[in-house]
Length: 170
Figure 1 (cartoon, helix red, strand yellow):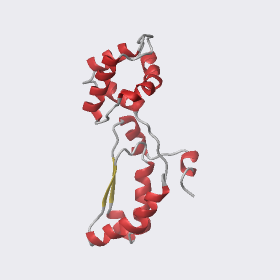
Figure 2: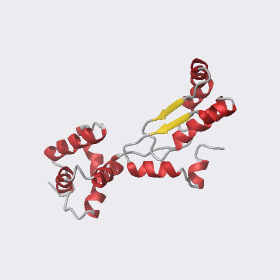
Figure 3: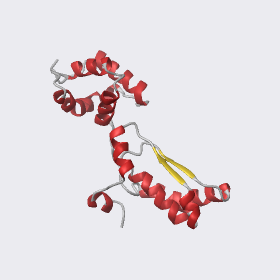
Figure 4: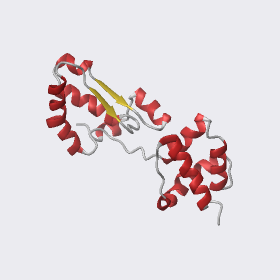
């Protein structure tokens, strides 16, 4: 076994860690992708291989910096404004108007789970502005959550590159 390999025992330890820390369920068939995602972290932290890295992770699982580094390395972070246009079209045309009618004049609260760096949460806010009349949209709330603290820090800033803005917005 090379130092880049992850033994079945260490894979199970990593899978248990991820399930406990984030709810991510890691299946054995995904072990191939772990090597490419975790090897740079193992090198950065000075470990000879992935088994050594997993030992460190498990020993330091109470350290929020270690937890966030692992979650950041393993999460996809695929996001863009109006990503997957069909669901957002359905939200705009049917779900938000129906929800707004049902809630009367009360604020709407929307949750963007796994929001990554925030583009989908911003998209929800844009939809609220498009669908709800005036002040009601401003009284509504979009909450974004993610397991990666690094992604959330970027989402809180809501500063996007020209390329990111052009990917999904006119």
